[in-house]
Each structure stands twice: as C-alpha cells, then as structure tokens.
Amino acid sequence: MFLVGLTGGIASGKSTVTKIFQNELRCKCIDADIIARQVVEPGQNAYRKIRETFGDSVFLQDGQLNREMLGQIIFHDEGKRKLLNGIVHPAVQKEMLWQILMCFIQGYQFVILDIPLLFETKKLLPYVSYTVVVYCQEHQQLNRLMERNSLSADDAQARIRSQLPLTEKCKLATYVIDNCGSIEDTRNQVKDICLKLEASKKHLILRVGLLTLFALVVCGFSFLL
Image (cartoon, rainbow, N blue to C red; front, side):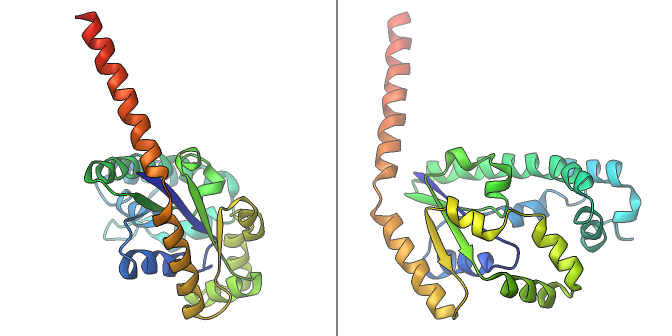
C-alpha cells in the first residue's frame, strides 16, 4: 500500500476533490479535517489542553469548542496559532497513523490522505509517494472563502496568509488539479489522476520490502534459537 497526500489552500476546492475520489471513484480517503474535529470533542485530551491554554472564552455554553472565536484569535496571532497546532496536530497524526495501519491490514492498494497543511507541517510528507494539490486563482480563493464563511476581506486574507501560497504548493506537487473552471473539468482531472494511481506499482514495491524485512527478522530470530 502507498500513500497519496492531497492538499490545497483554504477554499481552493480540496473537499470537493476528496468527495469525487471517495464517493464517485471509491478510493479510500482519510480526512484530517474530520479527525481534527473529533479530537477536540469534550472528553478528549486535546479538548482539555485547549481549555487550559486558551481559557473558557473559546468554548460555548454547551461545552463545545467555539471555532469562530478561536479562529479569530489564531488567524491574527501566529504565536497562538502555533500553540493550537502543537495541541491538535499530534492528536490528529496519531489517529491518522492508526487508520493508515487499518487500511494496510485491509489490503488497499493506496490511501488518499486529505491534509490541508501537508507541506506546512511536513510531518507525514516523508511517507507519501505522490502529492496532489488542488489549485484555484487567488481571487477565486478569497471570494469563495468570504462567501462560505461569511468573512470580511481582511479576515479571509488572514486565513489564506496563514498557509503556504498555492503557487508554492503547486511547485512541490506530483499532480496539480486546476479547480478554476467547472466541476466537470475538475472531475475529469481527478479521474485521470486516479487512473495513474491505479496503474502505479509502488504498492508492490513497498509490500516486497516489508515482506523482505519480515523474513529477515524471522530468520534472525530462528538463528538465535
């Protein structure tokens, strides 16, 4: 099994591409955003650490995390953003690694990791065989974000600037999906990449490597006996 890192910028259309991979092409996807929401639920370690670090003001009366309030804080304060990332990212990575292991056991050829900050954090980057970046033009990204999250231009720009520019991510990518046009155009690009991934032999190379390692371990253990 090999890993494919899917990323992009905020409001560039990454979620749309993930849905096409998962729902239309039946690819196995692990979504870091979904996991990030799960690890900050009441009772989780990350939830407790956020309350200890940021105080009660970033929580609603029902105990849930006030994402809007927290967003206003971290996207205008790099230091506090790093504090939050230091709490949430390790919890997300731990859960992702567990899910990756389960996918390996189940025999998937490849798994797509939907990670917004793949290039920024670099934590899982060494383990992915291919990277896919979802791109759109800067003005499209800004307008989509303002409309989707009901943000002012300044707030939307602050969130966009907190990530590596899309143009830079495209330079680092194996494949780029241009999401500037129609959904059908995007869908065709996703299908083309999926065909290329399915044709890859990396999963065989990795499995042979693991089997070889296993055989060496077994032989070494037998020799000790």
